[in-house]
Image (cartoon, rainbow, N blue to C red; front, side, top):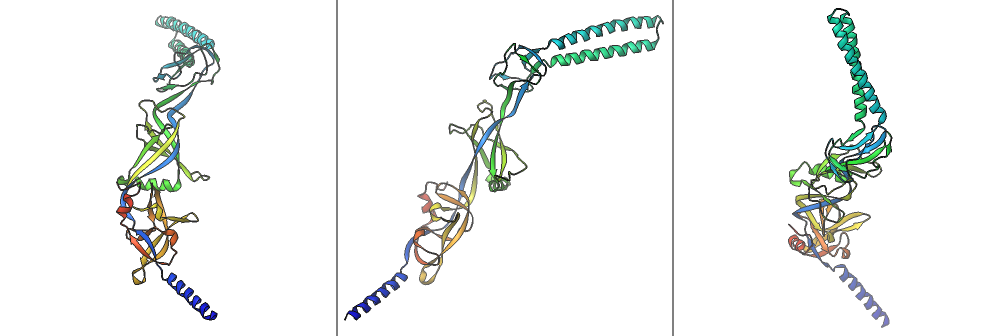
Amino acid sequence: MALMVIAMGMAGCEDHREGAHHHHHKILATTPTLMDVTTSQQYVCQIRSCKHIEVRALESGYLEKIPVNEGQLVAESDLLFKVLPPIYQARLDTDSAERDQVKIELENTEKLFQKKVVSEQEVAIVKAKLAKAQAKVDLAKAELNFASVRAPFSGIIDRLLVQQGSLVEEGDILTTLSDNSTMWVYFNVPEARYLEYMQSTKNDINKVKIELQLADGKKFNQEGKIGAIEADFNNQTGNIPFRADFANPERLLRHGQTGTILLTRRRENALVIPQRAVFEILAKRFVYVLEPGHDGHDVVHQREITVENELEDIFVIREGLTETDKIILEGTRQVRDGEEVEAEFSPPGEVLAHLKYHAE
């Protein structure tokens, strides 16, 4: 009797396992869809003036005059510093006196030539002597002019490193000058993003919008443009430096600031899926794709995908899926590759309507 009960129990267990084998999971499925999306990439950046130089003393001497203040906006050729070099002033006075003396000598020689006392060659010699004296005066004036330090371009004066009356030597840094009318913003772009940018610039539809986010979280009120891309990649980081140019009419941006570059691109007819349909294995991304099976049920197959952009709640797909593929949206942990399932389909429009990022 006991043997019969055990046998019946074992048969019941077998029936239960067979029933479990034929049980189908009820899961939710949808399809990828095409929609217009706006993608944004962020890069930490360094803000630099388009012109930023050190203003140095061209001659040695005492600072006689400093007609500018720190932070002042100066125009091209404005006097910044006046150095008093006694040696060059004395040299100019000496050379000027010698030139005047030769002028008198030339006048006397020409009078003697008219009286035929001296030859024409004597007049030519004195004229050459005067030209040499004038050249020495011009050189002394140029050396003296070096004592007047003028702005080579319009810009903003930085901190004054010397004061009036200071003794400066040739080459000493007096201050720095920044032209902030246009700012150069540098940031590093990975190789994959560089290739994506170069491809997108070929298509006006996918035009890249360049914005600058400042330290307070607000966006700068001017839109930028890519001014330069350096020639070489950094072999250690795999990045290449970009430079974005921003007009700075209100002089809000200053040399040395930091911020975040936002590269925003609107893509038309991008293939997107909800993020919750994706799972990762060893840093690779996969989805479960449903294909027709027996008895009207679907068979689950694992498929690797390549994500081009990650937005809030959705992925933009580069490779691995088409618009007609049916994928599992919910229940990915309940299924295995090759398993038959019973799927309830939800249209992609309804799925996206309940996400934070929805169709525009």
